[in-house]
Length: 216
Image 1 (cartoon, rainbow, N blue to C red):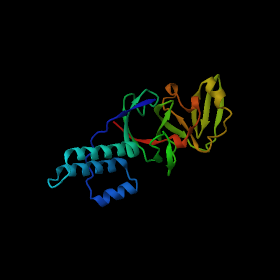
Image 2: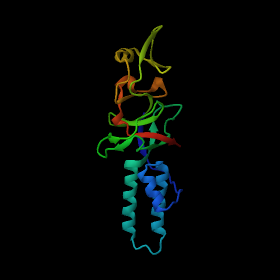
Image 3: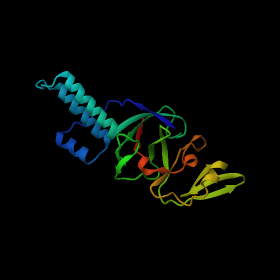
């Protein structure tokens, strides 16, 4: 499932004092909440009559804040494709938390360092063949895997899940006994239309740069 960048809607709630804004940033609270604080502070700058900043400088400050938020905290993408249906339909806009698992490298689609790991069931964002894709974390590192051939059909078995496989996928994956350390099994909810770990293998945790936290 490919995704394109989307302009964020306006969230102008959560007006707090600077101390509270600082605490929310340092402690990495909900990025939507922090985002609203940042926008409110910018709005206050423009509304203060005694403010000496001229318009070009205010525009520059606003752009820098927007770049920071988009690069490191929160972003919006338009989903293209049907691989995550019914949870996420084609052309839906999703919000992703870029600090859910760690700090993203601004020059590469990977984490500089991480402080959390994807959990089973998380909807995750990573890059594959120069496209951002969204899948579900179906299994985490260390999860035992089993394979079943039944009446000409092939399945991947783990944690009481039974995922259909093609013959090619089955013979490609069947040597794996568990999800390797440092990796996750990423699979789209719409199994028949998803190109995922069944085709290109396990996804390194360092490449998972964001977690989906909402849609519209």
